[in-house]
Image (cartoon, rainbow, N blue to C red; front, top):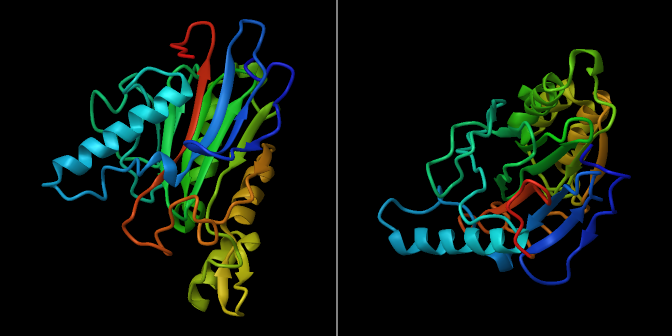
Length: 272
């Protein structure tokens, strides 16, 4: 059971590569799960916003990814990244990290034994991380408006639940962390889009602080996860308001930060 006696509360980080991090208590085998979200100080971790003829930019991203892995205590190049397309598709991490191949096209990933570090890249959408205390499986999901409406979170929970023994199906002992994203005070959308989204997930309905239609992505994600019986913790950081994280709406093209989930301890490549 990877959650051990229960999670240590998520903590803001005053400096360094993370804006928020939670370290869960080790289980009886000495394995501990961790979740975190990187800051702009960690650099952009996205390759997809670089030009095709920008080798220096690629090297900078690779250096940033390696430095973050050093702070995580995992092997360089071991983290599993995705080619995200705002889908509801979930894939299983195959043991090949970013140092060995391009990531598959999908918007959520699952590590069945929790051994492979997982990453999801965002800059206003939600980086959602999950840990199953029963099986030790972990997952990372990219949930923006389209993904939420199309069921990326339901599909991710289904994938974790399918890993449980037949007699232990359900979500008791499963927890999700909703990371920094655009909040309902800031995420302005057209009225038609708000109406469409709220018809599917009522909790998405919101209004900006200046009185125009908006979507509350964190509230919508929380409602979806809780409807499936998953325990939820929300990180109260708005990407449009907080310059410690990247925001596409505030500063298009500048970069992407990552939500990360990984384990350290017995059987993993732990590094300080």
